[in-house]
Image (cartoon, rainbow, N blue to C red):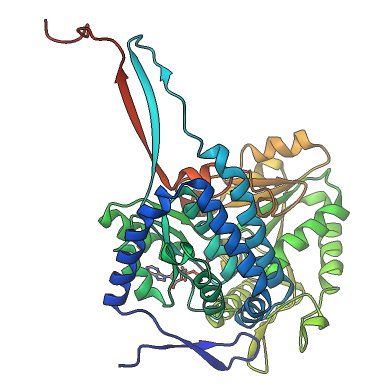
Length: 471
Ligand code: NAD
């Protein structure tokens, strides 16, 4: 039986690639192999793991051109694909630099009870599963993988079936690195393979939609394994009356439109103080209109195609719903079909409200609905009126004024007078609020600690009867 899955090219809509999921038996055997070698991965020590990851980095650099070409075909965009490879390389270096301190053995210490000492050990989970989405296919398949490997786990990764061409070139780089190839595996497949994978690992890291995240959480609970869930968002920006409009409009445009709005931390709702609303919309629209589609060539503009055909349909539905309910479109506003690919120019809307899908559901496109508020309290209330709580942004003349608003926002990361800063500040630990996720922080030192269990060794240091024993 042919189980291969056809893959669509986002720039021209052609089916020009296929992937083949492993059979149930192949997956079981692969997981067994990884588990077996994980023991040696730990015994070899941290220095060896650092050296192996550095060797992998060199292999990635050597095969960078092939990896980049596959990633560009997967996503239809170029500069962000280069950024993904650069981020993988710098991510390996960052964890190699940080791990010795984070994984240093703790010295034995005294406790509140004078004759009991405490030693801590931390033990790596043997096999970590990673399931990742299509919007940054390479980056999001490696963001949890590198710290998990560094922590001493073996890792098996199932990237999205929407953008899977990068998998084979990446597997090629892994296969050249002895030791690594026995503890790191990438597999192809869709939902069924992802669901099977959860049955075979000791911990699951999932990045994707809320709908799938809920299924993953339920499956992990059934297996009784930890699940770290990084899910969707509907990030709000609040622009106070005192804000610098020139900077706020530039930051919000970038935060909404970069990677064509296909980013979990895209700004998808903008709330602006009534008194500056008109000038804000005017300036944002003028700047949005300067951006062009990267069509027919990459050099023609900044805006790539919509990667997923079903996401294009969601965007078109949201725009239609907004239009029908009375939204005013200042620029963009159409999902266009050009030679088989779906495209959308940066879109600014006003006269929007929370009855519209474009203000309540994740759109995942370069779309900026802007709504006025009459008091700061109303702005905060509107921003919090969402099932999501991933991140947000606040713009004001003074940091204090912005921070006061940020304190009341129900979101895990808030950029002050800027947008999307969590993508750059790796040490910024954060947890998702509401349906945007569950579990420990993927950013900062906590990211690595997710992959180890702590063991407390409680050592009695004197030969004597404990005061609490039966007399
Ligand atoms: P998705 O949920 O459709 O798919 C994600 C992955 O889950 C894919 O690999 C898919 O094959 C797999 N999958 C599907 N059903 C499964 C099941 N039942 N069991 C196990 N695995 C299954 O998401 P998507 O459309 O690929 O990605 C876009 C979403 O990801 C958006 O909602 C976006 O906001 C979110 N996202 C979140 C973050 C974050 O850090 N919070 C980052 C990037 C993207």
